Amino acid sequence: MSERVISDTEKFSERNRLLVQVDHEICAGFADCVGAAPDVFDLNDDSLAIILDPDAVEADVLVEAAEVCPVSAILLFDEDGQQVAPEL
Ligand code: SF4
View 1 (spheres, rainbow, N blue to C red):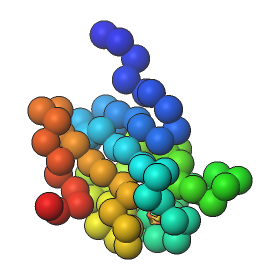
View 2: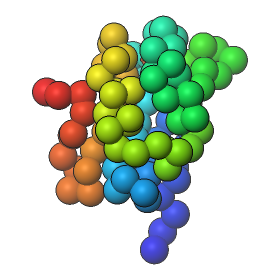
View 3: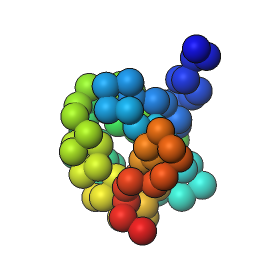
View 4: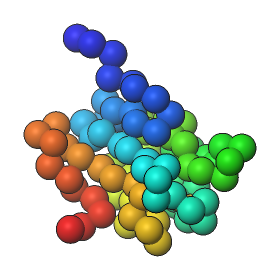
């Protein structure tokens, strides 16, 4: 199987079977995601969110982090490519 960890803005959580993405075109560095899941998200030197370890928490915490982002820059997808958070 190919490596699914693509970059610090896109990582696959094996534990939760979810793809986590951060859209740096949208991210405004509010850090709400870091507050919701500090083991998963951090800010880089440009104050943009990066993904540390998407397996550090359970799925509900990933969903919460995606939901609290005020600009919906964090997206979660299931293995079928369906967006699971934030709610459409
Ligand atoms: S909450 Fe959203 S805007 Fe703020 S740092 Fe995280 S991804 Fe970026």
